[in-house]
Image 1: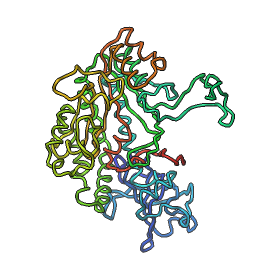
Image 2: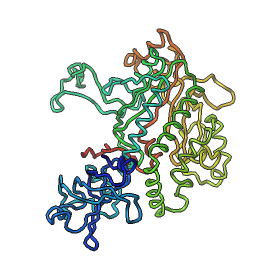
Image 3: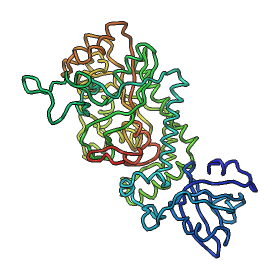
Length: 481
C-alpha cells in the first residue's frame, strides 16, 4: 500500500508493508524512529523499531536516502504530529545511501543547490509537492476540455513555420555542420536536408490548431514548445509546455468567457485535490518572503491568492482604458513605475500587477491592444476615432503576483486582411500558404488563447523561479539530466 492510502484507509491493528525512502532516522532510549516517504503524499509515516527487532547490520544500513521496505503493525501514534505509526517487525533495505556522500541530508537546502542535483531534488518535500500539483493541474486541464466537448489535437513538434514571427527557433537538421551542401550564392541548400526545407522546433501549436478547429470546431493542444531566447531570467525556459484551445465560431467575448471559466476550474481542482501540498508550499513561501523587503512581499498568502482568483469575477477593459488608468495613477504621477507609460507600449509586469493588485483588486482581462505590438494573425478592429491607432481583438488575462498568464485573440478570418498583415510584418506568404488558404475555403470566425503551463504551475505553487516547476529545466548553457 502507498503511504497516502495507508494514512487514509488502513485500520489500526492491521499488518502492512511500507516501501519508500528514508527521510530521517533517529535513535532514542533503545528505540529507533524512521520516517519514510514514498512520494504519494506530502506526509511521512513513522516506523518505530524497538531494540533488538532489527539486526545490527540492517539497522546500520537504514540511513537518510536509503530505500527500504518495512513490515509491521499499524498502531495509534504515541507522539504528536501523526495519528498512526508503524510498529516494526522486519525490514528490507533495497538500496543504501552513504551518509558521507548523499547530498540530501535532513537540513535546509537552497533552491540553487537543488537545481544542481535535479536527479535527486524530487525526493525533497518542496519538489515532490510541486510535481504532484503539476500532475494534478495537467489532469484537470485534460478533464476540463474533455468534459466541455474539446478534442485533443497533437500538433507537430518539428515544423517549417514560425507562429510568433519571432525567429528565435531551434533549427532541426541532419546536414553535416562541417560540410553542408551549398547553393551557388554560398547559402546552405536545405533541399538536401531530411525534410527538403528549413525546419525548426515549434514555438506554438496555434497555427495547426486553427486548422483543427476549422474541422472539429473545438480543439486544444497541450505539448512542448521551444524558444531559442538567450534569456537567463526567473520567467524563461528554452523548453516549456503550452495549452492552446482554439474554437470555431468564437469571437473575442466567447474567448474571454472560456479563459475565465478554464482558469477558475483548474485552480479550484488543484485546491480540492492538492490541499495538503498547497498548505506546505504556503508555509515554504512565507519563510522565503521573510528575507524580502516589505514592499516585495506578496499581499496575499498562497491559498488566499488562489481563492482570490476563483471567487472574483474578472474585470474586463480595453488596453486604451488601462493606459488611462495607469496615466492617472498616483504611482505614475510620482514617477514610481520603472517603465514609462504611454499608448502603444507593451505593458510590463509592474503595470499589469498594478491594475490587478492595486486598482481593481480582482483578476483582469485586457482587450483591444495596438496591432503593432501583437501577432500578425489577430483580427483587426474597426478603426476608431476614440483610440490613437488601430487595434486588434486581442486579450490578456492578468493575475496577482504574476501579471499576464494568458494571451489570446480572435483570429483574422479575412484572407485579404491576413495576407496584408503578413506582408507588413515580413512573413512570406508562400511559407504559410496552407494557413491562409483556410480563409478561402469555408472561413469562419474563430478564437483561442495560449497559456504557458509552467507559468500556471508557478502561480498555483507560489514558486518564484520557473526552473523550479519543471522536472528538468532547459535554459541557456544548461541541458543537464
